[in-house]
Length: 301
Ligand SMILES: Nc1ncnc2c1ncn2[C@@H]1O[C@H](COP(=O)(O)OP(=O)(O)OP(=O)(O)O)[C@@H](O)[C@H]1O
Ligand SMILES: [Mg+2]
Ligand SMILES: [Mg+2]
Image 1 (cartoon, protein in one colour):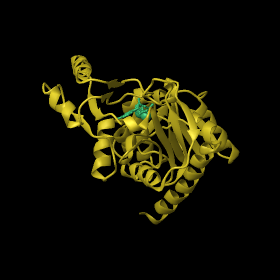
Image 2 (cartoon, rainbow, N blue to C red):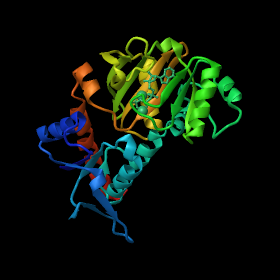
Image 3 (cartoon, protein in one colour):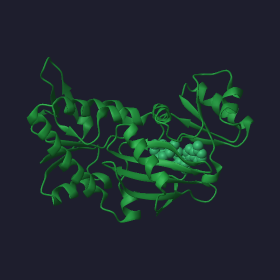
Image 4 (cartoon, helix red, strand yellow):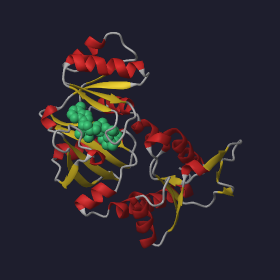
């Protein structure tokens, strides 16, 4: 198979591991920086260029789209889809899951547990927003933050009000969310590939830190998920239309609560902690689905 990996940087751990796993399985693989791709649109003839070279004959694309270039990256993935190239992550699912508000809306509609959350644009009624999620302490989150940046814990109502007003002053879109104290500064990352949890880890924030992100100094350990947690991860991934995802959840006194679903989850943390060949599982999934797609194309459905 000819596989394109969309990634800004070929030397990133996740990109390197996907290239390695694809080569091990005998595929012809190339890393394309999506920001160097451009799209040609005319009736019935979608085209894609990489620098000046026309992109043709790829069987599959694996998007690794970072949070800062979601819009552009998703447009490039959409063009591959229009050119009938199998994408391991659908462009629509990338945009849907990148927005934390939209994610929570989709999850709550599907009946999946999420922390109580409020969203309002430049509301003057900050008191009501805070009471809606059960009062202080509350979590305040930027809609498109990543690596724990843009997630704030406000211990008191007074602190919450001033942080919310500061974000509104900067015209930032924010969520106000119930603080899940029982999680004790930890969260769970379940890595889903093709409707199966292929690995899971618990991440614990460093002393005095409520954010468990590895980028914020958190540490991961391998864990077994409960049935309920496994089901929540699989349902969340499905509800968002993702075949490959990193589902983040908190262990609360009322069961697992999902806080976000990542469409380009990093491989370094999960592979190091679990020693599982997640990259290999992704390539195996692409192989299976490319085959299914070819069969469907042949019979015209
Ligand atoms: N409602 C909450 N209650 C308690 N802790 C929370 C809550 N929301 C987030 N956290 C903690 O803060 C961390 C960062 O939050 P979140 O995952 O929403 O942000 P992020 O910046 O998108 O992170 P990522 O890099 O995983 O995309 C979580 O991993 C969790 O440990
Ligand atoms: Mg995130
Ligand atoms: Mg997270």
